Amino acid sequence: MVYLSGGNELLAAEKILKNLGVKQGQTVSDLGCGGVGHFSLQAGSLVGPSGLVYAVDILRSALSNVANRARLEGLKNIKTVWSNLEVPGATKIPAEKVDYVLLINILFHTKDDPTIIEESIRELKHGGKVLVVDWINSATPLGPPAEDRITPKQVQKLASAHNLKLVEKFSAGHYHYGLIFSKQ
View 1 (spheres, one colour):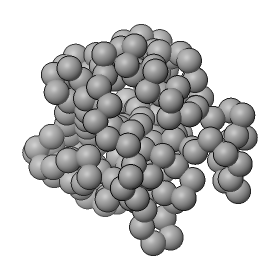
View 2 (tube, helix red, strand yellow):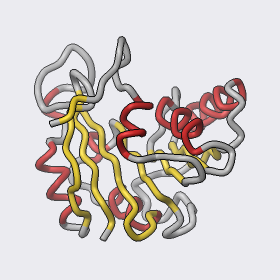
View 3 (cartoon, one colour):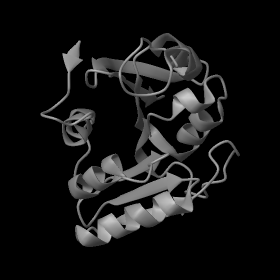
View 4 (cartoon, rainbow, N blue to C red):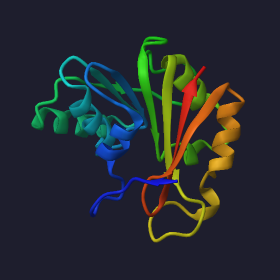
């Protein structure tokens, strides 16, 4: 298993995204981007001016923060999208136009609800990839209670039920696991 962490970062977004294969000119959707937009901003740097990053969240304050940070960093390729990810198709992101969907610390919120996986598949091009990074299933000094977390096996079951093929497992840091799935 590859270990992708770096320095003092909880999650080394740049390393993880490079391992995923994100590069110039691609389109990335960060579902549940959060108020820091750590992965959205890193993806914006990697895809460059010819690429596009959708930073999606239900909290307008989170989207405002991400937009401000993108502006400060000179990233004009980040489009913030307000959406409830538990409502099918609510993102309005065009179908089959995205190279990579990022699900970072989001699936533990919904556990067995397949809606976010279904939205990922709807957005992805054929052969596109879904990156899942979530909390390991044991007590840690950070993160949600262990009983609220989703295990890699639960994620794999949910993904395979929607015809996503597991292509890689890795350690995303001291407290996180990573899974990469491909749309068939």
